[in-house]
Structure formats: C-alpha cells, structure tokens
Amino acid sequence: MVLNKIEKLIEKYENGETTLQEEQQLKHYFTKETVAPHLEVYKPMFVYFSITQNEQFTKDVPLEPKKTIVLYKWISVAAIAIVMLGVYLSGAFDRQLTPSDLQGEDLIAYNQAMEAFNLLSSNFKKGTDNLSAVNQLSESFTKGEENMALLTQFDKTTDKVFKYE
Image 1 (spheres, one colour):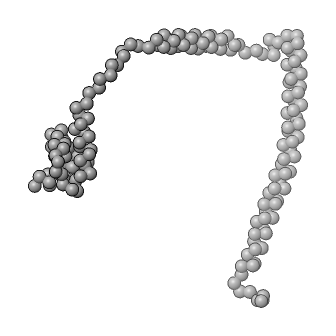
Image 2 (cartoon, rainbow, N blue to C red; image 1 turned 60 degrees about the vertical axis):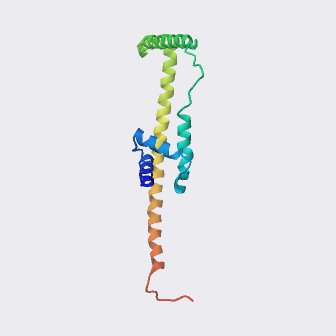
Image 3 (cartoon, one colour; image 1 turned 90 degrees about the vertical axis):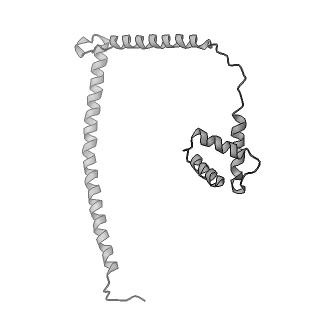
C-alpha cells in the first residue's frame, strides 16, 4: 500500500504536480535504509536534496558600489554632446546652391562638369541603340532553339518505318 502511494507520488513529482508535503514524504521515504529495488535510482537524488536543505551560505557579500559608474556618466555626457554637435552642424549645411550663386572659378568648373555630363549622356544613348540590335539577335536565337526542340520529336515516334539493327 505504501509502495503504491510512493510510486504515485514519484509520478506526480516527475510531472511537477506535487505539493511541499508530498515532497517531504518522498524525502522521508528515500532517506530510510530500505527502499524498494526498482526505486533505488531515486534515492541519491532525494538524499542530496535533504543534505543540501541544511546548507547555509557563509561568505560575506560586499555591498560597496564600484567606482566605474562615474566613468559611464562622463561617457554618456560626451555622447550627448557629440549628438548635439552633429544636429547643429547638419542644420548649417542644408543651404542649397544654385548655378546663379556661383562666381569665378566655381562657375567655370560647373560649366565644364555640365559639358562632360552632356557628352557622357549622348554616348550612353548611342550605346543603348546598339543594345536593341543585340536583343533582336538574342530573340532570333531563342526562336531557333525552340524550332530545334521540335525536330527532336521525330526521334521519339512510335511507328517507325525503318528498324536499325
């Protein structure tokens, strides 16, 4: 009768459904000298639990705060200052220049850059015209491949006139 009760308690213990009183019953049973042979595997675990229950922590724990916190405060102040400086400087460079604002060498450099960009633009247009011819050639090759695929169907006929041996 006691053995059936212990087995049911072990099953509840493995499922995590036992109360504190039931766990005390299990600890009491397994700390005895005589334990059922098929329950011997649980004995070391419950003996360990009963032994460690009486242990106490005796080491002193220092409660002094470390002095590195001051360093972190200064790092956060520096980070905020850098962010604020970045926000301020980004607002200073938002002014947009137009070609009418340029004078002297800046205007000459602007005009030369615009001429170079116009030259590049015209050459790119010529290159895209040549690509259309390449696209037509590619389409022709694709159509030819499709027609060649139809020719392979003649090899797969079921009613052959000639047999090759």
